[in-house]
Image: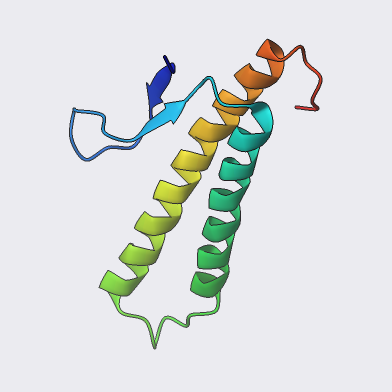
Length: 93
Protein backbone atom coordinates (compact mmCIF):
# COMPACT_ATOMS: atom_id res chain seq x y z
CA UNK A 1 0.00 0.00 0.00
CA UNK A 2 1.27 3.46 -0.89
CA UNK A 3 2.36 5.96 1.71
CA UNK A 4 0.41 9.13 1.06
CA UNK A 5 1.13 12.66 2.26
CA UNK A 6 -1.27 15.56 1.78
CA UNK A 7 -0.27 18.60 -0.22
CA UNK A 8 0.23 21.64 1.99
CA UNK A 9 -2.36 23.91 0.40
CA UNK A 10 -6.00 22.91 0.83
CA UNK A 11 -9.11 25.08 1.11
CA UNK A 12 -10.48 22.74 3.80
CA UNK A 13 -9.09 20.87 6.77
CA UNK A 14 -9.63 17.58 4.93
CA UNK A 15 -6.72 16.70 2.63
CA UNK A 16 -7.90 15.46 -0.76
CA UNK A 17 -4.78 15.81 -2.92
CA UNK A 18 -2.09 13.40 -1.85
CA UNK A 19 1.49 12.64 -2.89
CA UNK A 20 2.56 9.01 -3.15
CA UNK A 21 5.74 9.17 -1.08
CA UNK A 22 6.66 5.68 -2.31
CA UNK A 23 6.99 7.02 -5.87
CA UNK A 24 10.45 7.10 -7.39
CA UNK A 25 12.75 10.07 -7.04
CA UNK A 26 12.63 10.70 -10.79
CA UNK A 27 8.81 10.67 -10.95
CA UNK A 28 8.49 13.03 -7.99
CA UNK A 29 11.21 15.31 -9.36
CA UNK A 30 9.55 15.46 -12.79
CA UNK A 31 6.16 16.39 -11.30
CA UNK A 32 7.77 19.08 -9.15
CA UNK A 33 9.63 20.51 -12.13
CA UNK A 34 6.42 20.59 -14.19
CA UNK A 35 4.64 22.68 -11.56
CA UNK A 36 7.67 24.93 -11.11
CA UNK A 37 7.91 25.58 -14.86
CA UNK A 38 4.20 26.35 -15.16
CA UNK A 39 4.42 28.76 -12.21
CA UNK A 40 7.42 30.44 -13.83
CA UNK A 41 5.39 30.86 -17.02
CA UNK A 42 2.50 32.41 -15.11
CA UNK A 43 4.81 34.82 -13.31
CA UNK A 44 6.53 35.70 -16.58
CA UNK A 45 3.13 36.57 -18.03
CA UNK A 46 2.29 38.56 -14.94
CA UNK A 47 5.52 40.52 -15.24
CA UNK A 48 4.55 41.66 -18.75
CA UNK A 49 1.20 43.09 -17.63
CA UNK A 50 1.15 46.82 -17.06
CA UNK A 51 -0.72 48.24 -14.12
CA UNK A 52 -2.89 50.36 -16.43
CA UNK A 53 -4.15 47.32 -18.37
CA UNK A 54 -4.54 44.93 -15.45
CA UNK A 55 -7.57 44.45 -13.24
CA UNK A 56 -7.06 43.66 -9.57
CA UNK A 57 -9.03 40.41 -9.78
CA UNK A 58 -6.92 39.23 -12.74
CA UNK A 59 -3.69 39.91 -10.85
CA UNK A 60 -5.05 38.08 -7.84
CA UNK A 61 -5.91 35.01 -9.96
CA UNK A 62 -2.40 34.94 -11.44
CA UNK A 63 -0.87 35.22 -7.98
CA UNK A 64 -3.15 32.52 -6.51
CA UNK A 65 -2.38 30.09 -9.35
CA UNK A 66 1.37 30.68 -9.10
CA UNK A 67 1.30 30.29 -5.31
CA UNK A 68 -0.63 27.02 -5.51
CA UNK A 69 1.73 25.59 -8.14
CA UNK A 70 4.81 26.65 -6.15
CA UNK A 71 3.40 25.09 -2.94
CA UNK A 72 2.75 21.83 -4.79
CA UNK A 73 6.25 21.93 -6.31
CA UNK A 74 7.76 22.48 -2.87
CA UNK A 75 5.88 19.50 -1.41
CA UNK A 76 6.95 17.34 -4.37
CA UNK A 77 10.61 18.41 -4.09
CA UNK A 78 10.54 17.49 -0.38
CA UNK A 79 9.11 14.07 -1.22
CA UNK A 80 11.73 13.65 -3.99
CA UNK A 81 14.48 14.48 -1.51
CA UNK A 82 13.20 11.77 0.86
CA UNK A 83 12.94 9.33 -2.08
CA UNK A 84 16.55 10.05 -3.07
CA UNK A 85 17.66 9.16 0.46
CA UNK A 86 15.48 6.04 0.41
CA UNK A 87 16.89 4.98 -2.95
CA UNK A 88 20.41 5.18 -1.60
CA UNK A 89 21.30 8.76 -2.44
CA UNK A 90 22.00 7.71 -6.02
CA UNK A 91 20.56 11.00 -7.25
CA UNK A 92 21.80 14.53 -6.87
CA UNK A 93 19.64 16.58 -4.54
